[in-house]
Figure 1 (tube, rainbow, N blue to C red):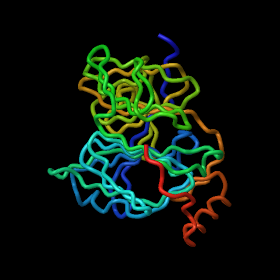
Figure 2: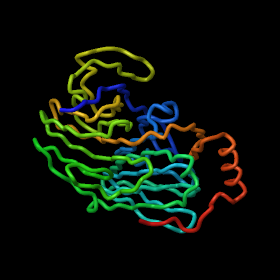
Figure 3: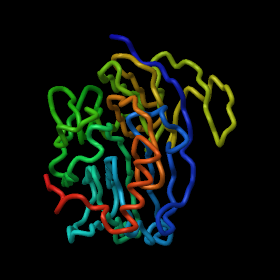
Figure 4: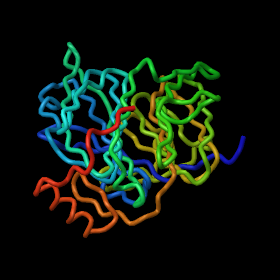
Length: 307
């Protein structure tokens, strides 16, 4: 086995309210820049209470980033100011490159039983691509390959490559990988990650060891740090695991089946100026963006490209 990545930090996602009143859990966000570079934010919007997600995310702008929405239960209706509209259905992904600017809305609808589940990841764009032409990549569930590995491990490949199988989302600036991994109890997932890329995992359900050495680590819970070897090296649902550099990760499910997102990408290493839904490199660029939004000159291109 090669150079297995050690855990740098584990933190618990925290409740917050966004949009018009959507209750969700934020795994990381504004306060963690540049710790997760090239990623900016990960939100977990799973809920069985329609009152907590139906208010949705009405019309708002984006510039300078990519938003990646992955739905595992229910439906998210989306539309933009140029008349594009559609649904992100169960198992599907929308990879939206806002680039120079999009004004859109996202409205979670849930399923017949009132369940809604999904994740939204924000990825940064480098200065040279901040003002690129916007585009959508709408990926249906059947377009995402699922492969079986040793010990019954299953991997849905949204972006990246596992055992020679490539996901449908390709040619992204930050060279990302986005996997949905399910590991039976007692089984191990070993996976190569490009050296130099930032890598993290977010636990959806179950428990597991995310460090093959089972080393103790500092676990941050609502701002309070503590050490507990027996408990803290075992990660559980709603934990975020940030890795040090290395060549691969080794993750073992313990006591119950484990499901998690495994995400990595190439750091950008540039200054970040971030206000609300717009992320640029300087405060002056932010000022211009919001001024253009107010005076109606925010949209720079015609209809976003569909892929």
